[in-house]
Amino acid sequence: MRGGGPGVIAAPGDSRILHPDDPGIVLIAGPRIRRRGEDTAPASAQDGVMPTSCGSSVEGMGMMKTKNGRWTVGVCGDSTRTGRFPSGTDSRAVAVFGDSTLDMRHGLTAGDEVTVHALAGFGDVRVIVPVGSRVEISGLALFGNKRSEVTGDPGPDAPVVRIKAWALFGDVHVA
Image (cartoon, rainbow, N blue to C red; front, side, top):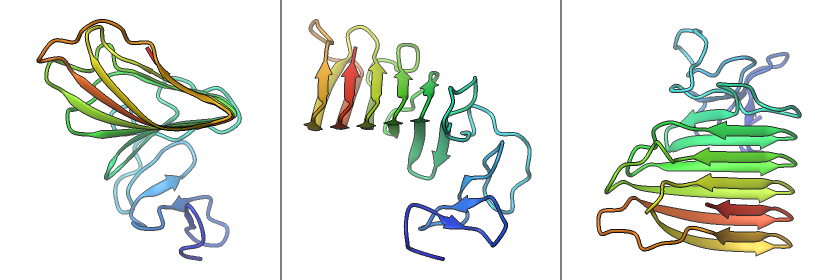
Protein backbone atom coordinates (compact mmCIF):
# COMPACT_ATOMS: atom_id res chain seq x y z
CA MET A 1 0.00 0.00 0.00
CA ARG A 2 1.67 3.24 -1.14
CA GLY A 3 1.14 6.92 -0.38
CA GLY A 4 -1.36 6.43 2.43
CA GLY A 5 0.71 7.67 5.34
CA PRO A 6 4.13 8.06 6.84
CA GLY A 7 5.43 4.67 5.78
CA VAL A 8 4.77 1.71 3.53
CA ILE A 9 4.53 -1.86 4.77
CA ALA A 10 7.18 -3.85 2.90
CA ALA A 11 5.10 -7.01 2.38
CA PRO A 12 2.33 -8.91 4.17
CA GLY A 13 3.78 -10.43 7.33
CA ASP A 14 6.96 -8.31 7.10
CA SER A 15 7.65 -6.08 10.11
CA ARG A 16 9.50 -3.47 8.07
CA ILE A 17 7.99 -0.09 7.24
CA LEU A 18 9.52 1.69 4.25
CA HIS A 19 9.84 5.41 3.53
CA PRO A 20 6.98 6.38 1.14
CA ASP A 21 9.19 8.53 -1.13
CA ASP A 22 12.23 6.25 -1.16
CA PRO A 23 11.48 2.58 -0.55
CA GLY A 24 15.23 2.02 -0.24
CA ILE A 25 15.05 3.56 3.24
CA VAL A 26 13.71 1.25 5.93
CA LEU A 27 11.99 3.27 8.67
CA ILE A 28 11.26 0.44 11.10
CA ALA A 29 13.03 -2.86 10.84
CA GLY A 30 13.41 -4.38 14.28
CA PRO A 31 16.75 -3.91 16.05
CA ARG A 32 18.56 -2.22 13.15
CA ILE A 33 18.01 0.13 10.25
CA ARG A 34 19.51 -0.37 6.83
CA ARG A 35 19.03 0.49 3.19
CA ARG A 36 17.55 -2.28 1.11
CA GLY A 37 20.35 -4.29 -0.47
CA GLU A 38 22.95 -3.36 2.18
CA ASP A 39 24.34 -5.81 4.70
CA THR A 40 22.43 -6.35 7.91
CA ALA A 41 25.18 -5.45 10.39
CA PRO A 42 23.84 -3.73 13.50
CA ALA A 43 23.54 0.00 13.11
CA SER A 44 25.79 2.30 15.07
CA ALA A 45 25.16 5.80 16.38
CA GLN A 46 26.98 7.10 13.29
CA ASP A 47 24.74 5.14 10.90
CA GLY A 48 21.49 6.05 12.60
CA VAL A 49 19.26 3.68 14.52
CA MET A 50 15.68 3.00 15.30
CA PRO A 51 13.26 5.35 17.04
CA THR A 52 12.08 4.24 20.43
CA SER A 53 8.50 3.25 21.03
CA CYS A 54 6.86 3.22 24.44
CA GLY A 55 10.01 2.89 26.49
CA SER A 56 13.15 4.80 27.34
CA SER A 57 15.89 4.63 24.78
CA VAL A 58 19.26 3.07 25.42
CA GLU A 59 22.63 4.13 24.02
CA GLY A 60 22.43 4.03 20.26
CA MET A 61 18.63 3.93 20.13
CA GLY A 62 16.22 6.69 19.17
CA MET A 63 17.99 8.10 16.14
CA MET A 64 17.32 7.45 12.48
CA LYS A 65 19.34 8.62 9.48
CA THR A 66 17.74 9.57 6.18
CA LYS A 67 19.04 11.24 3.03
CA ASN A 68 18.08 14.70 4.34
CA GLY A 69 19.45 14.49 7.88
CA ARG A 70 19.08 12.65 11.14
CA TRP A 71 15.96 12.10 13.21
CA THR A 72 15.89 11.79 16.98
CA VAL A 73 12.52 10.40 18.04
CA GLY A 74 11.08 9.86 21.52
CA VAL A 75 7.68 8.14 21.54
CA CYS A 76 6.41 7.19 25.01
CA GLY A 77 10.02 7.46 26.15
CA ASP A 78 13.21 9.46 25.89
CA SER A 79 15.79 9.77 23.14
CA THR A 80 19.10 11.66 23.17
CA ARG A 81 21.58 12.48 20.44
CA THR A 82 25.10 13.74 21.08
CA GLY A 83 28.20 13.92 18.94
CA ARG A 84 28.99 15.75 15.73
CA PHE A 85 26.39 17.92 13.98
CA PRO A 86 27.97 18.65 10.57
CA SER A 87 27.62 22.19 9.28
CA GLY A 88 24.93 22.68 6.67
CA THR A 89 22.86 19.71 7.79
CA ASP A 90 19.37 19.43 9.20
CA SER A 91 18.44 17.51 12.32
CA ARG A 92 14.92 16.57 13.26
CA ALA A 93 13.78 15.99 16.83
CA VAL A 94 10.34 14.58 17.60
CA ALA A 95 8.81 14.03 21.03
CA VAL A 96 5.39 12.40 21.34
CA PHE A 97 4.44 11.55 24.93
CA GLY A 98 8.18 11.55 25.64
CA ASP A 99 11.32 13.65 25.40
CA SER A 100 13.89 14.16 22.67
CA THR A 101 17.22 15.85 23.39
CA LEU A 102 19.89 17.11 21.00
CA ASP A 103 23.11 17.87 22.89
CA MET A 104 25.27 19.99 20.59
CA ARG A 105 27.74 21.20 23.21
CA HIS A 106 30.62 19.15 21.83
CA GLY A 107 29.33 18.77 18.27
CA LEU A 108 29.60 22.30 16.85
CA THR A 109 32.65 24.39 16.06
CA ALA A 110 33.14 28.04 15.14
CA GLY A 111 31.40 28.96 11.90
CA ASP A 112 29.09 25.91 11.81
CA GLU A 113 25.46 26.43 10.75
CA VAL A 114 22.82 23.80 11.50
CA THR A 115 19.04 23.71 11.33
CA VAL A 116 16.88 21.79 13.78
CA HIS A 117 13.25 20.95 13.01
CA ALA A 118 11.63 20.28 16.39
CA LEU A 119 8.15 18.82 16.93
CA ALA A 120 6.88 18.48 20.49
CA GLY A 121 3.48 16.81 20.74
CA PHE A 122 2.63 16.12 24.38
CA GLY A 123 6.38 15.95 25.05
CA ASP A 124 9.49 18.08 25.26
CA VAL A 125 12.30 18.72 22.79
CA ARG A 126 15.51 20.07 24.33
CA VAL A 127 18.33 21.50 22.26
CA ILE A 128 21.54 22.17 24.19
CA VAL A 129 23.96 24.45 22.33
CA PRO A 130 27.57 25.44 23.05
CA VAL A 131 28.22 28.60 25.05
CA GLY A 132 28.48 31.58 22.72
CA SER A 133 26.24 30.13 19.97
CA ARG A 134 23.83 32.29 18.03
CA VAL A 135 20.31 30.83 18.20
CA GLU A 136 17.45 31.75 15.87
CA ILE A 137 14.12 30.23 16.90
CA SER A 138 10.91 30.37 14.88
CA GLY A 139 7.72 28.37 14.63
CA LEU A 140 4.43 27.89 16.41
CA ALA A 141 3.44 26.96 19.95
CA LEU A 142 -0.16 25.90 20.57
CA PHE A 143 -0.87 25.05 24.23
CA GLY A 144 2.89 24.73 24.65
CA ASN A 145 6.05 26.82 24.68
CA LYS A 146 9.02 27.52 22.46
CA ARG A 147 11.79 29.39 24.18
CA SER A 148 15.49 30.05 24.16
CA GLU A 149 17.45 30.67 27.33
CA VAL A 150 20.71 31.28 25.50
CA THR A 151 22.27 34.49 26.77
CA GLY A 152 25.37 36.46 25.95
CA ASP A 153 26.66 38.07 22.82
CA PRO A 154 27.85 35.54 20.23
CA GLY A 155 31.05 36.39 18.44
CA PRO A 156 31.29 36.93 14.68
CA ASP A 157 32.45 33.34 14.09
CA ALA A 158 30.02 31.71 16.53
CA PRO A 159 28.08 28.60 15.50
CA VAL A 160 24.55 29.35 14.24
CA VAL A 161 21.70 27.08 15.30
CA ARG A 162 18.35 27.68 13.60
CA ILE A 163 15.41 26.08 15.40
CA LYS A 164 12.12 25.62 13.54
CA ALA A 165 9.80 24.67 16.38
CA TRP A 166 6.28 23.27 16.48
CA ALA A 167 4.97 22.71 20.00
CA LEU A 168 1.51 21.21 20.49
CA PHE A 169 0.81 20.56 24.18
CA GLY A 170 4.58 20.34 24.60
CA ASP A 171 7.72 22.47 24.85
CA VAL A 172 10.69 23.22 22.62
CA HIS A 173 13.46 24.49 24.88
CA VAL A 174 16.90 25.76 23.80
CA ALA A 175 19.61 26.19 26.43
